[in-house]
Length: 472
Ligand SMILES: [Fe+2]
Image (cartoon, rainbow, N blue to C red; front, side, top):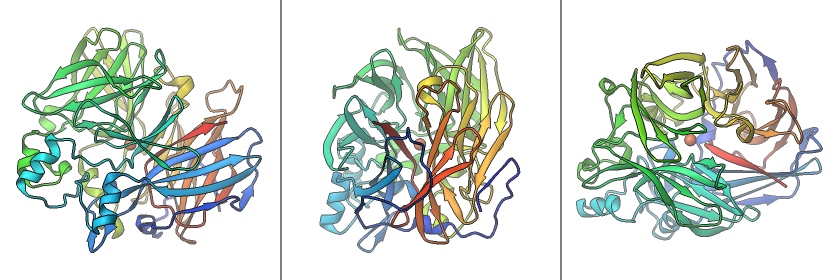
């Protein structure tokens, strides 16, 4: 049974590992069976990218993040739901299909090339384009992305791969760009590696394919950067102390992420970059944390508030290796933590806002860069994602949705039309149901997490990361 309560008990005996099985089948279904009733106003599509296949020939990739990208589309119209899924036809995927082996280096998988080949792979454009982390709709274009510079455009209706959308100005980037409201474009981070390393911030204007660098900072050991914060004035750039000496990447013989080192003695260093001038203020130093996802950031009375899903260290990167996950080993649990930077004094205070929350979403178009109240995400009380959480960052209270044997993905908030309240709308989450081996699209009331409807997909959808709802 579905549960809505603030004290949902952890289920300790459920086996949720089926969500790490590879999915080879591409399909299209015009009408999924729907239980419940979808809101009349909900028209559009939830489009997601996710790793879906970890085996190539006799090889298996090492890490959850390594799997080949598959696009999934739940189309919603007139109370009905369609579903389609297709592999992203990246050069990494096509090369693997053609050769029957892994050809490109992924996050934690290296195809064991020669030393020369490794060197070329980091200092030349031979990087993977396996865009399995997140996607955006930029102007009229759907763009899927990962943390290497090549973003991949696809057709949002047919899921057909179109080609390279743009190339980020660096060897590493994030799959979590922000909307640049002034230009209608997107704002993102890149790391330029080489004899002199630089952090860069860049804008890709809507309708254009050439990134424009708006700020850059020198750095000797870049930190792993999965996302960043944005306020009306500042790019909020937190360096969590999981860092790399870039020269070690081609020389070490290790896959990309295994070159990073946890150095808690560095603390967390937060730099503010003026979006208009590109000038940097800081860094402001505080205790060491690790983080993939920022929830929101804003300015308030001379301070900058940054809310992020944090871990005490970078063990989570180890926890997400595929053999551990398929073996049912637990993954570390993120908390929602608030950092408050007093820009004048340089002091940084921090506090826990919610005990467990990852894959955060907010009412982005209304509240990003601004004071806000609600974050939705998922939590992993049982060792793997097993509930959807709504956190009230003003009161510190949380409510949850959970169901036995079910593992929900990122809950995407969709605002109801003409709705004034911050939580007026629905959440869309793709849930893996271990009892059936299938996944379903879950539609919750975003205010109280009560279930409105669910639509069962024809197969299990491997656990993924991020997606977007595009209305029509
Ligand atoms: Fe992410």
